[in-house]
Image 1 (cartoon, rainbow, N blue to C red):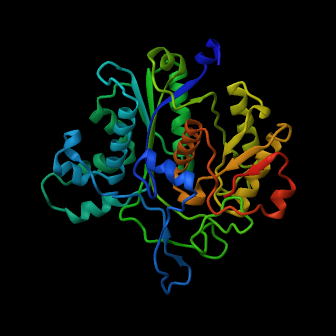
Image 2 (image 1 turned 135 degrees about the vertical axis):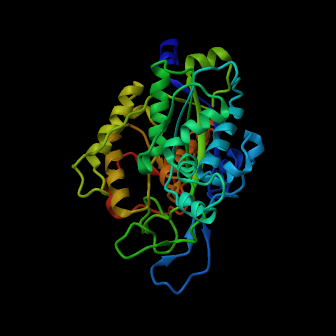
Length: 386
């Protein structure tokens, strides 16, 4: 990349994850490299539509409050998702070797998932001193997630909570990138924490729903029958590439461009997907990056393991990369982790970063072969199987 490219790009300089089966970046890569399935499965029950499988993170309730100077009473009231978010951002900043005292404008774009913890802890501790509607709101509502991180870690840039369902993590990354390129901050953190407490033992998979009936997620595979839900936490530290190079930072990967859109009413229903909108946003991201389809070798896809969703995404990718001129490999991390809801994009982003860092593409767990309809319109697309 030349000097001009440096002005329009963002470097990944730190990363942390806590995902099903792993509590470190090193463990995550070993899972990816081995093609492991990290979903927890239990014995089947007598419930006809209940599937005893879930992507649980290690030790979701553990929290070192002393590390952040938090009183035990406040720690108990605080949603575990926000405690984990705080740890993730702190760990990511540590991996980036950030001088927090000397870096004033550090922004945080962070999201959390749905939680019943406020109701549960409020009921369990009702009547105790300090347990009231206001204290429960401040320690549990997602609105306070990013600000809590900024307060506890002494970060003085923008602190914005991001909520956009399954796209929360990548929306946070996009906003952080735009903040940096607009010189709104010197360093930006995009983070997410999506953890259900207590961890569900499984999920309902009624006929016609999006849940996998056998507890296995098979993105783009002929036997795909739906997703498996799970939890995830992570944070990525971003910096303008020119600054990262000038400061001698260790650069894990580079973000050349990003884009966002919505398919509006072009889809069949609110929970549906639209191939035309997906095609448009992929092309927009390439355009921002100054790249063409022929410059891309790999795509980390959403790959939910649902036939309609996978077919729509595959069609969009096939259209964009039709004239690539060489094989374009496609992978999806949900095969081994499940669908991590708000944290889904972070898991995929981290996988792409680690693939670049290790110069190796990881296979999609449980992939064997494309269904005939996807194979017929693949063009240069090549699924990464085991």
